[in-house]
Image (cartoon, rainbow, N blue to C red; front, side):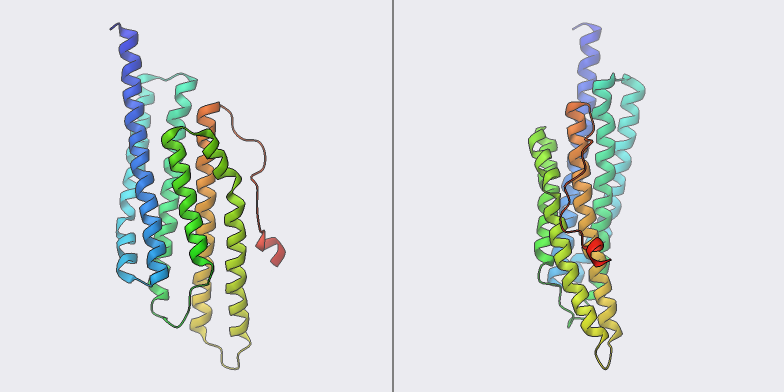
Amino acid sequence: MNHGEHTVSSFDNDLAQLERRVLEMGGLAESQLQGAMNALLKSDVDVAERIIARDPELDECERKIEASALSIIARRQPMANDLRYVFGNVKIAGSLERIGDYAKNIAKRTIILSRHPSIAVPQDMGALGASAQRTVRDVMDSFTTRDAQKAEMVWQLDHQIDDLVGRVMRQVISRMSQDMIKPKRDPEEIECSTHLLFITKNLERIGDHATNIAEVIQFQMSGGWKTTPRPKGDDFQSSAG
């Protein structure tokens, strides 16, 4: 083996190790999101606390990915085609860390909601959570298989999460409005509804980060960023305003 072949092989090994770290981080982010939704729907405080406790693991994963990427750049000085894979993996790790943060936030709000068992989770919250989980799973599958078409599908279907977000928000706002006109307002019900609105927005942002990852995967494979606007669904905030 000549020196050039050795250098290429070493770079490939470094990049493969970096991608394994991203896949491990993706698996943890998926697990955190699934656990957070299970905790919310079952009002399970123990599970919620475990989700919160594991969040630093995702932060550590991101730090290791950043350190590995910097090491590859310093030692291998990759050319443009290879550099975009290294750069893209760092961006993907950043989105996965944010997905983990939102899962942690859902878990924290679940613990508060559990103190008010009479406050029901909106009917469509489970469907919204399942859609967010499926989006994260699909985009990480596309990363694993380098499937640009699957990444495009994730990007195109972001509007489905928007539609569910709009439905859940309307359910929560409707209940809040009813609470406000009651002769005796219950501040706890208003507080719980506010937490449910934040959870809904957390799930919307998780979907946004999954589509961000899809864009990065397509950039890694094509060398160009998308220039068309992302398809959007139910724009609840505009219609509400």
